[in-house]
Amino acid sequence: MSFQDIAELVTNPQVIWSVIAAIAVFATVVTLTSPMMGQNKLDKRIKGVQNRKEELRRKSREALEEAHSGSLRGKETKGLAKTVVESLNLQKLFEDPGLKDKLTQAGFRGNGPVMTFYFFRLTAPILLFGGAAFYVFFINDFGLPTITRWCAAAGIGMLGYYAPNLYLQNAAAKRQQSIMQAFPDGLDLLLICVEAGMSIEAAFQKVSGEVGAQSIELAEELSLTTAELSYLQDRRSAYENLAKRTNHPGVKAVATALIQAERYGTPLGQALRVMAKENRDMRLANAEKKAAALPAKLTVPMIVFFLPVLFVVILGPAIMRYQAM
Image (cartoon, rainbow, N blue to C red):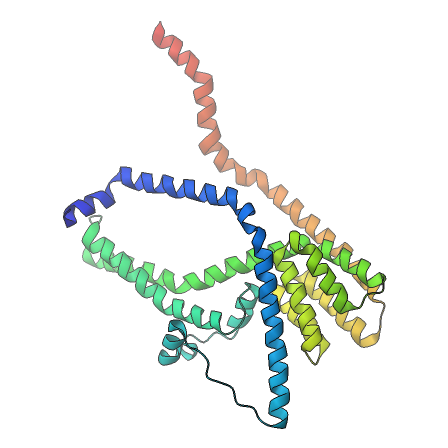
């Protein structure tokens, strides 16, 4: 098969529509089977929380050893992304002060995701620019002049620079939505545990085990808070980290209430009861907002998909009878 045959095959409309249909079928199958495949995610997340707990314990031990004898760390293993980032000094070139907070809000912790982000910020524009330039110069030029094709390839390459940030924003938004759907119920369970006489660490641990079936992300965050309450020197930092990781006003208000109860000795049960009611009202308000916006969003799909079908069903028999006459 020659290069011309490959170019004709790639630009064939039937092949393009077949690929689009295959992608749509694959997306439908993945959407239908994702609930069944997501049953083991809780165990993986809890395992990740245990790793984070062991990391906090290790850092606490290292801090004590350094305070007394000055311990030396072993050499860290370097992957491809870390090697490229460190050799090109991409952390200074693409400096982003809030990157770690964004990664944490999206569910990525540690130094590895930071290196991976900077690596893809470097490689994604290059790969997209190269792919777009190869397509418009060797496969299908769309009848455009050379300067226009270069500009189109450069524009697609520039999109690759912002693609990692868009991915992080999307992942953080999905994670925040999952947390806030289950957070009022988790507060109710936390209130019951606290009023039953459990400590706040035991209450967080109990709620994280119970709420995992509804929201894996919330169970993970509560388990992390339990680990930080056990190993951080300042308990206030654990509550502030919980608010920072979720980045939601409801969680921030609860963290502030827990900090005040820890500092001033105010009744924790009463504060949790008020916060649970406020978060339930917030969740109901968000649901009502989405329901109010639904008719406007359904207008275009109804015009494009429903009305043609109704016209065919209503006018089809009349047209068939007219043709038979």
